[in-house]
Image (cartoon, rainbow, N blue to C red; front, side):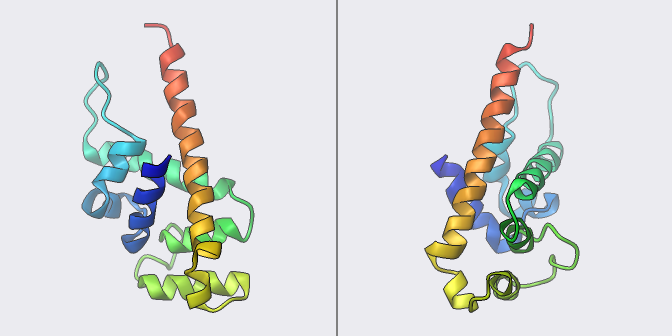
Length: 136
């Protein structure tokens, strides 16, 4: 869980779309969608697409305005990919009625990252549990 949270914090810098995950956060991809032995070989590109889908679904599962804010922060929503991290923080901060510097503190951004990390962790665990129960 802690690794997901740490990698997610680093993923905020460049965003969570597949190309950004491949380029700037391949460790995050490996963590949430690892290459599996005994399975047809999936490239980093395939796994980054799966990791992006998992990330997007986890963000969508959060309550508003948390979901909207994390979608902005991770460049998941249209019109956010070209924005700097400071610009994304400014947009997300508006959703909570706070200044960007206040939003950046653990009580806001840190709490959002923790909630999202928990949601991702739950989904990774569920996927792992389903894989273990499939007949071989």
